[in-house]
Length: 318
Image (cartoon, rainbow, N blue to C red; front, top):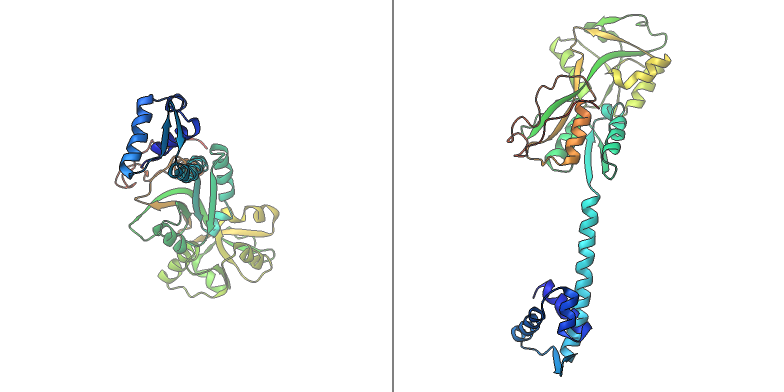
């Protein structure tokens, strides 16, 4: 028994005549007659009493009508739900604290202009946590500054940034344009938690050059780190994009670090088998065009890299 057969049965029961039901359903009378006859034959029941040209429901027919109307009502509700769900598309985006505190808000404003009906769900975590969420398909895409290790994920350099040494007013480093990496051993460091891309990049350089260092504070909050530095509890290595306002106000000063590869990029990361929906492509386009880094590798360079999903080349311009 199909939904269409139930629709024909209900229409016939309501009209009392097959000819009228056929008109309402835009089908032939013979089609209605065949469906009713097949329902009765296949189930061994009589649904209508035929008196002249009129049809009257039997007790079995009346019971079936109650069930059929309830089922058709649920079926139509499901259709409405699916139609509305197709219009209310969502995108699950992950970002590290650095990205969340610098470029994410502006990216979302651009995404909302381009996709006004899109519902965005943002998760802020460190690079390792975001990598895990991407592998479990709990995120569609993420922007990170740390190293991604899983071969199942595609990494696309997107936005440039520079790590600088930041310190508060009156610090001995005030007025210095640059300090060597070795000099960091003289100052207590206020750093992000383990798993942070910024911390990993700094510690890797310090350990590689065998420079001793002291971590005075550890925090997963960028704002807490900036306040601690402003109050003179130590210095921090942080992305310049994150302290733009503090540098402009004079609350913080910053200098470059000699002997330290301070240039970095914020990377777009997604599963190589991820379907690149139009919303996802739009977000990628906005992010790639936000920065000025070279397009080292396009997510559409090969169909295998994007899980067999081909897409158009990314456009220029934000």
